[in-house]
Amino acid sequence: MTLVAGVDSSTQSTKVVVCDADSGEVLREGRAPHPDGTEVDPELWWAAFERAGEGLLDGVAAIGVGGQQQGMICLDEAGEVVRPALLWNDTRSARAAADLTGEFGGPRAWADAVGLVPVASFTVTKLRWFARAEPELAARTAAVLLPHDWLTHRLRAGGGAPTTDRGEASGTGYWSPAAGEYRRDLVRLAFGRDLALPRVAGPAEVVGETASGALLSAGTGDTMGAALGVGLRPGDVAVSLGTSGCAFGLSDVPTADASGLVAGYADATGRFLPLVCTLNAARVLGTVADLLGRSPAGFDELALSAPPGAGGLTLLPYLDGERTPNLPGARGLLAGLSRANASAANLARAAVEGMLGGLADALDALRAQGVPVERVLLIGGAARSRAVQAIAPALFGAPVSVPSPVEYVALGAARQAAWALSGGAEPPQWPVAAEEVTTASTPQVHERYADVRQRALELMT
Image (cartoon, rainbow, N blue to C red; front, side, top):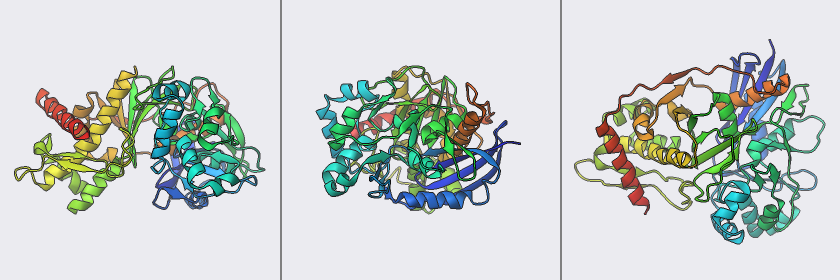
């Protein structure tokens, strides 16, 4: 049996899976936590990888890395890290995003150039913030990498130039999915001068070897890894409910949404991956469950005991600011509270509806860009919530299936490693079991959820 490994270096932890290269069966797993916060020393990711992979990687023939997207790791001429990495969820570059948007001709110009409109998440805005806020450290900077780029480079024996892939590069704000090349003019606009950027490797390329002799695949961003792991097909849209919420589907052509709602990413196979991302997802449910003193199971039971619409209670769940819509300084808002609906059950239900309502808007934004939504695949930690599964079909307006709980980013990275090992034209076909959610939805339920979404929209305006 040939073994391959996949790594998911996410916001909260590192996960490692070891799989059978032919079937995709997960044979070994490990995990180690990351520190909380929006900036971190990348060496802590390496330490987490070593702990998560301890004793798992013997006999592995190839390894791939999936990583949280849109971070900023700045290196000096010697390849040393200049400052702690800024993560995707760091919003201090919001002002820089607005400035850059105007300086390059507005949202349409950005969407046409790189498939997205700057917000605080994207690397290009972090470069502008860094250049202006920390000029002495910026002056020492020679190169910029993203988290998966850095970890892949650290794994590569014998050094060599850093590499990335088209999926990861498409989240920077200075690589064009449509043209397949860097826009160095945008790097110079943001940072004031050019920087060394990692070479963009091909989807099935082998980019090096580890010290133990395992082949290294190109790796990719976490969203692209999840798409590979879940076996996303045309017509499918994955809704990922982790630290952030994401809705993404496959496209054969690049998208360019000047509204900024849809980011026109590339995927890890040569296609495109239009995506809408929210900052607030599973943590909304966890925060409200803690507030109510309930376990996850108890929270689900409570939410499901309340009627659709939560008796008129609406939670706008922008607990950490928000990316879509672009409101980095926003905070959560509870509206419609009365003596009649002031119950723990209604608050729990409003939390689920508020989180899913934002992702229902994300699905509509994808539809507006021509992305078909024939089936929704719920993945991520909060996808296991009974309340989420019960409420999602009516809010999403599409059939919902829940794949078996697996670390899909790590699985996708392992599938890419198997692809690089085989040298085939397409990734290996690994079966993914999924259970369809059978919750019935009546016209009255649809109407109540339309009301929920309308109330939330009114709170934003």
